[in-house]
Amino acid sequence: MSFKGGVALSEYILEMKDICKRFPGVLALDSVDFSVKPGEVHCLIGANGAGKSTLMKILAGVYTKDEGSVEFDGKRLEHVNTLDVKRAGIAVIYQELSLVDGLSVGENVFLNNFPRKHGTIDWATVFSRTEELAKELNQKIDVKAPVRSLSIGQRQLVELMKCLNSNAKLIVMDEPSATLSQEEFNTLVKAIHDLKKRGIAVVYISHRLEELYMVGDRLTVLRDGIHVMTDEISNVTMDELVEAMIGRKVEVLKKDSTDTSRTDEVVLEVSNLSTRKLKDISLKLHKGEILGLYGLVGSGRTEILRAVYGIDPIQSGEIKINNVGVKIKSPRQAIAKSIGLLPENRKTQGLVLGLPVWENMTMVSLRKFLKRLSIQFGKLYKECNDYVGELSIKTPTVHTMTRNLSGGNQQKVIFSKWLSSGAEILLVDEPTQGIDIGAKDEIYKILKRMAADGNSVIIVSSELSELIQVCDSIEVMFHGRRVARFDGDDIEENAILKYAIAGGAQ
Image (cartoon, rainbow, N blue to C red):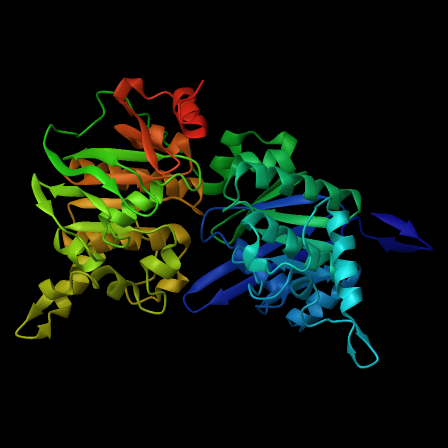
């Protein structure tokens, strides 16, 4: 605390004190304190459902707090909406970017705030100012190009340019690296350092804990709606951080050659399969096996799952299930063959968020609860509640809307859907994307349990450490081709990376 002219001046640009927020049946925030200094990167972390998003939505004017106070840049923020907050100098970049694909970079930067000259939009100023903003971030970008033509990393930077154009003094970044390549992430880190030099504060939210040590100055941990700790990042080890987030030490699952449920029985065989994006793919999946698919973005990992599940047309090749050739031309046919898919985007492809938990759990298996054309709800609810217990799904009831669950719990609902359906082969795309470390641990246990029960799993993941931790074997993809396979004790990180990056070339 400093003084000027006898008036106390806070060292913080943002001070949120004793913030409480209640939803029906849930105390989402319980007397939470959170403060940010000018020009610092303050990392806000916690497990899914800890209250991070709720706190930031209160700051952004999306939610109204029930108790507490918010002061920003020396002024009290009361009864504000999103526009008031933006005018005050607070900008939020959500994980789902709020850009209009069909408009140019410049149009997106000035959307709803176009400069005018002689009664019409001053396009010269729009594009010249956008170019200046790009230079401020040390970026070369065509300001007249449509946003749809940009990479994810470039779109992220356009969001930053929007913030700068609105004269933001504090920028909230919600999972900014979730879909970025390593090169794009490096660009983002540099942009964040440039923001700090200009005195702009950043609230950085991420489940990738290693990133915090690369960009952050201080951190605040929330758990179950309660403030657990605030400290300099340099004072906190990774293990201490994990324990603060989840309230316990994480059990690290280590895969070794004896830790397997794999048998010699082949349940899925793909031979010389080609699609528009795959060339001559052959692989085998055994009963009780967890098989990993690894490669860089665009290598063809997800496309294998899409072909097997009947989404992408097969141009040539053969698929056998239990040694019998099959033709799978749609997801419906895949489901009939006891194949299930956990897609990369659980919110738009894996769930119907507007339906309750029980409907998402049983939408594939509803027929087994029918008797004389009537649903046996007692039997249905019992099974759903059994899965809530078995998979440790945190939900008030099975009647809770699925959108109200955290990301990790939504993912568990999808697992329960396929368990209920009796799927024997599970295709899993990015099982822990956007999920905190505690929930990851639980997802890994579910996968291992499914394999132990005789199911077979194929996992696509961008996190090689994840695959090494849970998989019996790893297939490596490069430019639409399968270039290597590693089994058991032969699974080795550097060798896998060599094939993924260069196709095995020296």
